[in-house]
Image (cartoon, one colour):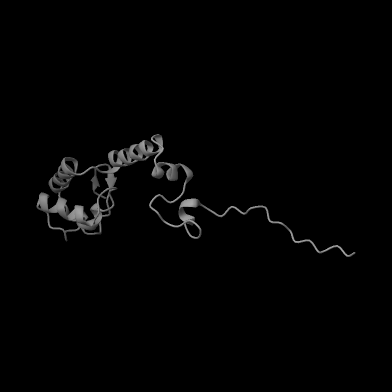
Length: 128
């Protein structure tokens, strides 16, 4: 498996698709990187030479923020929102959806598994 910026990319897929396995690179950015590196996007990752891999790595390091740096920046942005107690920061703290989605129903992904509230057992009425 070819390694780009410390990440193993799939060998059998096209290099355009393989680059999307890096955090922070989607298909559009992958095409831009390959165009700048002058590499055919339909080429398979296993067919790349060491020179081409180093060229792709150089272009990524020069132009795109990926992996650890990007994750760190996003984490710092969220922490800043929480520190200034903005609406979005408070939603992050509470573990609720941040971008305006409804929470009455749905939002299970963000809220987690349902927590059942102590069920009141129905008692039979006492005879008089």
